[in-house]
Length: 407
Image 1 (cartoon, rainbow, N blue to C red):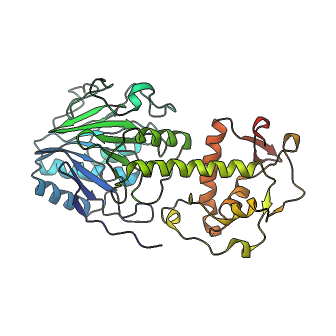
Image 2 (image 1 turned 90 degrees about the vertical axis):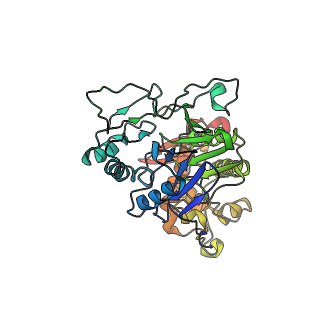
Image 3 (image 1 turned 45 degrees about the vertical axis):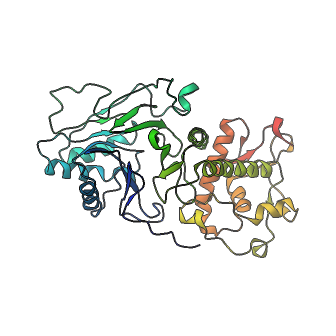
């Protein structure tokens, strides 16, 4: 596979959007974490902070100086992952030293009770005493906001929250917050951040993580996708059911471009989102087909052909269509496994590893563990939707189709 195209360390994406790379290229981060300076005028919003690489802050300083930005009013986090939040403590410490008499930027992040305490502890270690305020919408909710709030904003529809960047969800106590302190504030779904000629809508998009937020820049019909959509390859996820719903939500916006958390700008958002969704649905159908068939084994390495090392492996994400194992199954060129348990009514039983061995037959075995994790997430979604069942035989978990869905 061809190497990733180099991206400029700092690049003007539009009159309101400048991208600053987090200086952390790698297998999972592609060219590095994309951080974005958003808005017009001397006060602007920063989206994400990279992971804290030493070269990032000087690069950000140079970009802000070039733009004539005197103050970052707000720092917004798309989600808790270290490559997006790790740069926050050193950045705030730097700003406190640079502007000792000025208030620190307000920090916004969807509340995550499992992960946020670690971030707050790191801030406290640097003398940055932050409080975390939780809104009435828990980050662990499995249901996305329904009804009109899930679609693109319309002029005649008031949204749930309409807040200036410097306003708060809860008033801090004067005894706990000093003039140079700030608070990590929870982001509400559909909250609006307003700057000079800039309107940024917050969109709760769980799936990649439970606290994931994307953002819609109204004036430019642009989406900031965080890690929900990447500029190259496909994204990993914790909950596939939520992730698909989030992709469908972003699709409703009919955006002109997507600014991803990693990789180059996406210039065909609708087609890309459709492809992301279709990719997952195709994999589901592949799994369902296998579960309706008797478990099989390949005829050896000659059947498999050369192993792939494609883009999915580059992302540490072996979700890509693996190849001939499945196609050979359709052609009847795989042999049934004998002497194995069957489910109710003689139903075929598969382990997740056996599914991997067929679906990813053309991938190197070194990727099978990661592939199995992906397949298990698909199976969890299908089980949530009552489309597959589990059967426990001698402490081993097998997967099968419910009787009503057997072909």
